[in-house]
Image 1: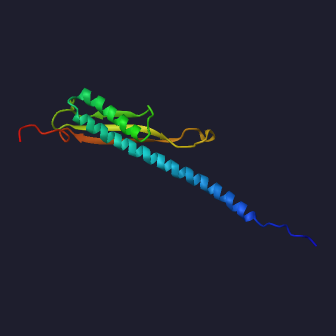
Image 2: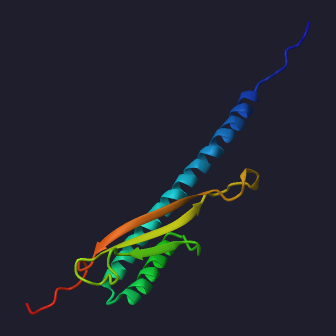
Image 3: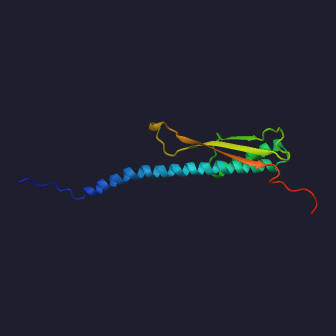
Length: 147
């Protein structure tokens, strides 16, 4: 007569390994989504801050410096301190953006790398993110004159 093998407890081991195999990719997906969302919020905030800083400046040269500084602060507030971000400011068709009726367009772009991507899969994988904000000149300026 053959004895049956005792398999008590093997379901627990199989369930544990199955849980680990399913849980690790799910945690990575959630972390990646949070990283991309953080980057999207950062570029949006940077574009808004840069637009406001530019509009409040007295001239275009000062506005460009203030816009770059404001965007840098907004990006670093979200942990995106990488030097690879870009800023573009335009107000077509005018040369001088600080005149009545001008609409300044601020564009901020950066790249967010996904966490824990192994070198086997190509190393750094990420998403390119950008945001645009338009500010009419005069929207954030004091009105002159006596009350």
